[in-house]
Image (cartoon, one colour):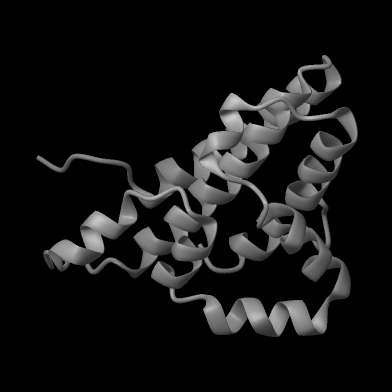
Length: 141
């Protein structure tokens, strides 16, 4: 019996958390909106990683242990997307700026207060229909 989250589960969770982030933003719950938007990126990158896992092959223990991080930069590396990220940043300045905003997110942001402007920028950085971080992630998940 398989345990854990499938790639589809992670994709669906990322999409759902983005809806939640927008709802939180609309209702003035800006710190929660900020946190959830960052969490969308984490889930999306984990869906990219899940795509790389070969069925019926037990991954290396170090790889498995490394998956249990909330560090966006480390997840990009585990997803094998470092080169693609640099290329996208060079090609699309707006994406590069959005990535910079997302790169400031940490799991510890769930414990901090965020101002309205920062939360709006974070949600936009993740959700922008052309240059948003989630749009880029979806190309790889």
